[in-house]
Picture 1: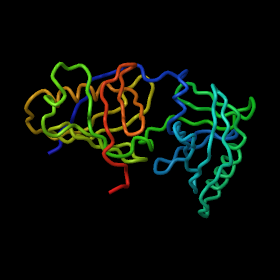
Picture 2 (picture 1 turned 180 degrees about the vertical axis):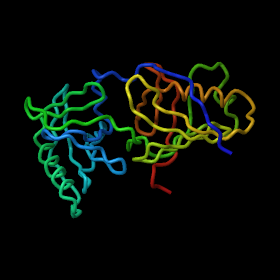
Picture 3 (picture 1 turned 90 degrees about the vertical axis):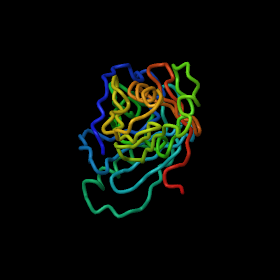
Picture 4 (picture 1 turned 135 degrees about the vertical axis):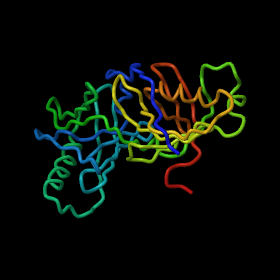
Length: 253
């Protein structure tokens, strides 16, 4: 049985707009070359920057695209945009995609203000995106807890049997998890001054020890994350709450 799992309020500050690492995430297109773009709830036009690979990828409305990029401070250069070659029957989507691909290759700088990314050609804005609230590619997969902060009890004492875990699927907002005792469902969101996760439902099995409570308290406080190779870290402000190890990548056996 699934019961409502109520989250306590948390308004700790997420990453501020002055942080250059804000670029390296997924963004949904909302404005292009003077025209507003409605976000398609099923398959939005988006762009995603991968810092470690210096690679940008996304979806233009009909085709996936990818390219290399370089950035320094607020300068940005996207090089040789390539895409798949699916036929684009919808004329509006085809127009949007063609303009977007043309403009991306001319970008010279960017600015992030109030959860929006604006791309510029010289001093003229050419495209604007909002922070996406679907699971970004670097989160996709199964992650198992390996560290939790703030408890005197040893980690193996908190979790002598099964460890907590999180399972994310790319391009979805909902995800599932395991508290070490119960299954949970939750929603990923990416908004300034808000929790990173919104807990939704949880099974109600009686659990021995403190492990589940410690995990849930930390989980509800998380307001941003980082991924370094196969390690996922969750933070509240500058404080590390938890670390997870990737057990498998989405799509692998």
